[in-house]
Image (cartoon, rainbow, N blue to C red; front, side):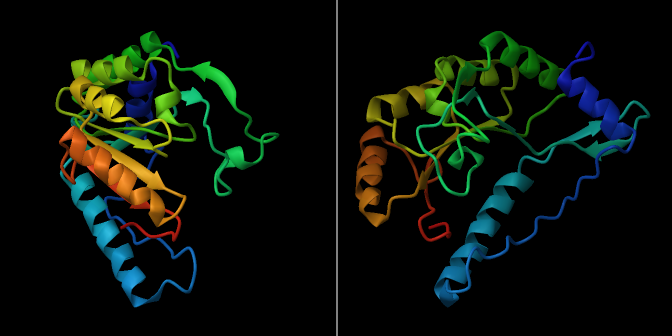
Length: 219
């Protein structure tokens, strides 16, 4: 704690405590009945993700002067809250992972961003984890802090979309969000609603991504 989270990771990394594999592997199928079309979607999804990650690979110098790849993306659970209990998530069992009305303080988050900035970090900051980021009471300020201290970093927000409105979408991007990825769990009938929101907010397909999760395959 006294050395700070980001600096401590760098020390551990330089001592060989972590081994990073720069190669990105194809995920295993969630079922065996996807079919050829679904498998092609899986491959396309991974290729799209790989391209995004590769463009943000971060290299830093260890205390010995060696140039090594640093963390490409860092994901934050901003709070102990989610409005859903998906069966694949630990929150499915409230006794194991209960909802807690606890939020990462803006001050602590800013301290982390300052430390990452001191390391020259310019990878991807992901707001998601095992929580719904839009339930964080200061989510807009969290995004502003990210961009204030890491102007070259990319800020992605992953959401189930339940709390999204056109007004929130616009404000999220005004604060500095680069991409919003909406996980769709309730079937294809929800797609038109989100497509309409995207068009009304004037967002591109790169800024607003719909991720089909009810079949286990990205669209």
